[in-house]
Image 1 (cartoon, rainbow, N blue to C red):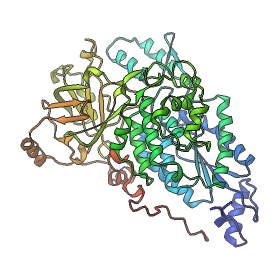
Image 2: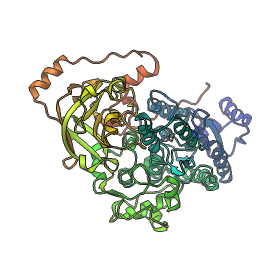
Image 3: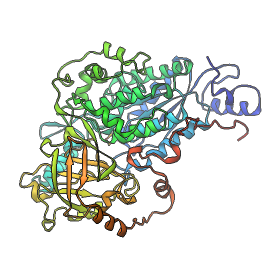
Image 4: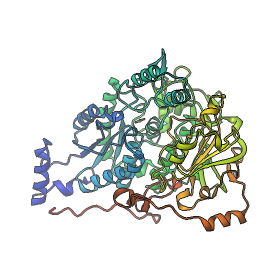
Length: 574
Ligand code: FES
């Protein structure tokens, strides 16, 4: 075994070594002066403020058991829990803070490897980003999807059905009693959203990136197999320390291309595009947004899970989970990439058993279009993202008049006002929701269709914004427009009545306004002033990058010259 990182704290007879050993012994960790046992951090984001992550408490104990069985020393510590439902304006505002917390907890403590216990949307990428920068052996253990709810005798998925039922409620088609019963039904247990939202998507991508054990990410919360997997993760990370398997070995260009292709093939969340770019930005893999766009092409959705399909994550698990997806998509993937179990992704595909119809073959997909697309054009010179699999093909080629909302509140206040003259052909534009403007791109991109159009049977319209949308959402929605409006992107220059053209075939979103007129508008444009000028929001706005760079902070991205960005601390008296 190579010299352990923790030995700088724990070996020898200096007062620093004695103090360090005493600190761990006081916590019940059996550390001796002459022994080299890997210290494994177990970062736990279980929290009462985040029911999606509550299953992680029990899994932490299983990981601890696995680490001990493999001869390591487990140290469990809390990490901030980013709960999608309660944190406002959006948990995304704190993803980079969690990433910094993980990186700094690793940097400042004697840990040789780490297990990241995550589940809800932002906890997974935030923790990976920090660990990727620290580059110590890392595994992710996710907490699984919550049980399905049942409403009016039908099994319903988290998020996706809420948006549908809310449309019924706001247009007067659902009584108070029914609305109350729906709320009761949704309170059905702990764990992540059980549709193909951001949490499920990111958990699945962890497997594909080689950061969590094959077959682990779709196991439902509370399932006994989750504990067994967590125990195996504890054992595995000790071996990863012994063989020096670090994120830099796993997070290669091939691994990212596999993740992008699987993202398209599962009809995954558009949020994952931002998170993949942020994680890639912590590495030397050299991945760009246009790379992701290229990798999405010709990968249709083969997984029948909401919102693209009709099933839930539990069905995907029964069908063979991620190994079955990898098997079906094998012709498109770089199969020599390494999985967290140590074997190649090709090995995972070979061993996979695919059952039933939830995972299809690419020649008989759930929808014929690619799962996702990256668009460019005069409205989004640096890029925008769309989930094709939940959009309407009839709107893929569409030109219409813009109806512009300057911010989210403006949209909420006026969307149902017939005076705006919105027709099914209109293109709804929402701005002021980007990384700086939001801040942190709240999931406001699925702009509601005006109630009077819903009542006439209109179910979809083209909507464009610099916001994100929930992975559980759907519709012909162009998101993450960059540069965003708050820094003077083209989105800031659109006026109601302008013609906007969407062409999925050409991969473009364009504002059909002459350059002279745009120059005049630009000359009159003024940057917005923000009320919150102190603390985290101020720091966030100063350093956040745009969506194509993953909204990471400029000072946290890997140095472009390949120099190690992570510097070990001086280990002396505190
Ligand atoms: Fe936490 Fe969906 S709200 S996983």
